[in-house]
Amino acid sequence: MRVSSFIPSARVCIIIVIVVSAVLSVFAYRFYQIKSIRVNICENVGSQDNIPLTFGDGIPYILHQSWKSCQATVKIKSYIDTWKKTNPNMVYKFWTDDEIDTFVSTKYPEMYKYFTQLARPVMKSDIFRLLVVHAYGGTWADVDTVSFRNMQSWTKDHDGVKMVIGIESDYPDTWYIQKHARSLQFTQWTFAAAPKHPLITKMLDSILLDLKSMPVVNGKIEVHDDISVLDFAGPGMFTDVVWEYYKEHGYGWWRQFRNLDRKGVKVMDVLMLPQIRWGTNQIDGDPESWVLHKFEGSWKFTWFGWLVN
Image (tube, rainbow, N blue to C red; front, side, top):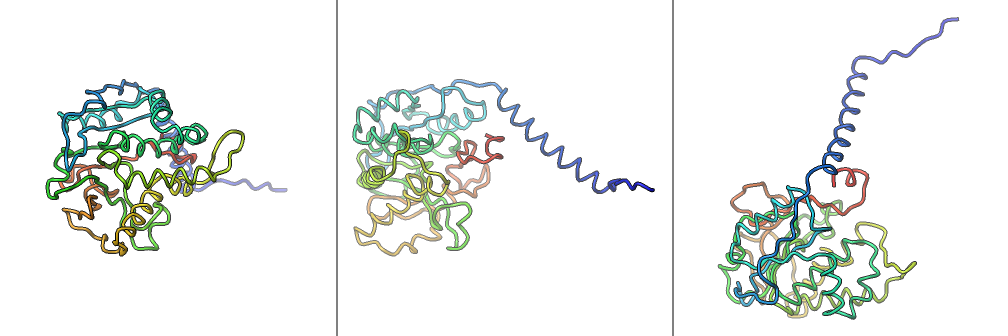
């Protein structure tokens, strides 16, 4: 009786080698990141309690940032340094977790009760950025963003600007679903405002109202899918409240904000910058780009996201 044996073809062997090599490369990259040198990024410049300069109409010239710890990769520090290089006269405040806890408990005690119950760090981060800009004013930028331009120049073409937001995505209604919460969506990884701006107040009121109705399981408030995170206090909520705010003041036709020119448009005291300035599709070194998001600190928990972050 003849026993047949399977001998893979050369093409199959090549495919197997390619797949195995790719998998090993990803794991090697992950191992390299874990073992790579960490540097200190908690290097403040000035104090959030004494901000001598402003831009626009009373926006304090301060940048707020935060990260999982004071230690980060050289790459992350290089991103932070672009902000310091393009804004040599700004106040820079890096917020540690302990400082964030003290800040929220002291200045926003009603929010603090729910803040401590949030299970996902990204949900805390989404709330904190609004709270800190609400309290002190200034600019928030994620640590994996790159600055190409001085913040004080953002508003030079417009008078009376008290808040600056950018359009992150501007897609046809059926194209955005896989990557974004809304087809026309605003960034909340970079924004700026004067202290106590009513639009941010409205966002915080909306978040607090939602928190009060969310179930607490084993002492934690949890959401179980990425879209819910985006809608809770992320860009989905951010975008929705902007439209609600405008509707309350008579600006109800949101399609007028599609395909903005390079100067953007100011509605009331809020400056909207076009996607080419702050969006997600710029090219490194593009002279039209003012802020570039590298998406290095992905919060979405997938097997690949775990490997590369």
